[in-house]
Image (cartoon, rainbow over the protein chains, first blue to last red):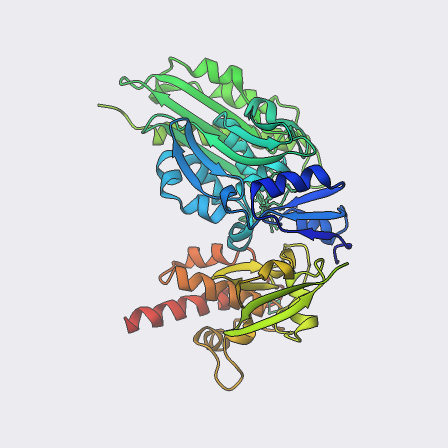
Length: 289
Length: 159
Ligand SMILES: Cc1cc2nc3c(=O)[nH]c(=O)nc-3n(C[C@@H](O)[C@H](O)[C@H](O)COP(=O)(O)OP(=O)(O)OC[C@H]3O[C@@H](n4cnc5c(N)ncnc54)[C@H](O)[C@@H]3O)c2cc1C
Ligand code: FES
Ligand code: FES
């Protein structure tokens, strides 16, 4: 249960990190270590070089800019969860983070690490996809932005290039008073979810839906937006939503199967959970008067 | 592989040591420093037995490398109390039968120690969520939860 030998590097700046990534072969970035270290201890992977980004101050922190709320990749999950900015402007993210692991794993684990690892059940990438977040990436060719729609390439696979690293995520908050809902089923509190659902809503003065995001996670290999069902919600009244088509959309996804859970059960859960998330979003949507 | 030197504070004492970068913090504490109070169960992050406090936060010592504690303040179960004078939390575990075999206990203690510092007045549900990352395979959680609630109540009485 020990990691195999590797060379350890601890850059202090982004420039040093960039140079190391360009120079070294079979290198892995170490962020919170809450997914990488188990894989190394179990020898599922054995990098020759480990690049520890915990001491690069520029990679951590939460900033509000004109373009949105930027969360540094190395920001710990605990700090995202307790941030006033996040709690007031991105309440869905705080709501979801309560389900991510335990106090010990959130004290080390980072939002960027989770979004690079891309477990299909992970909450932070799912929330990012619901918000159409932007992934700010740096590499040999400088800095560029990857939209959420292009970030997810498949199971445990992001669009990040070999010599690139994730610098930050940028979220555009929805209108003040927007509705948000989150529901997941896990076998124990803090375990990876078997499946989950997310809903975001904006409405007009009369309570008609003007904007919607619906997403299922843990069902397919990547979080999945229910685009058609989103469109069908527009113009409906929040007190009188036709929820059935939304549940049906989640139930028709290509669900994964594993040793514990059949595809059929996952599809069933996907339907139930998106329904719960949507009801919660209706309840939290504030009526403008 | 090349050893690295680390300097850190351990249970209030300034320490220096040489470590192989692949050694995790739990092994380092047990094998290099002889502090066998910290227990290693699964070594891949699921059981919580290895929990220690680093810079005020409870962390899994099997998922952190010893080289990473450079400049940090580390607390282990040895720093809480000793057999002649148990800490309030340790005493509450004894009083409430919060342990049997004791394997999970160091992790439970360090988790709750850190948690009660930041959340002095938790509800029962809060305590259960706080220890959701620590598995006990023999005592059950009733006594452990009660111990934490007792400590919180005693501290609240005093203030
Ligand atoms: C007991 C337990 C329960 C958990 N429960 C959950 C849960 O319910 N939900 C959940 O989502 N997660 C859960 N996790 C995993 C979560 O804790 C991790 O924090 C997360 O998956 C990875 O983040 P990290 O910062 O620890 O990254 P690391 O483990 O350090 O890295 C993960 C991967 O991302 C890469 N990487 C990290 N940062 C960057 C970067 N900035 N640029 C490029 N590549 C990078 C690494 O090279 C590695 O491949 C759990 C973990 C444990 C041990
Ligand atoms: S030994 Fe570290 S969590 Fe089990
Ligand atoms: S006391 Fe035996 S595992 Fe908890």
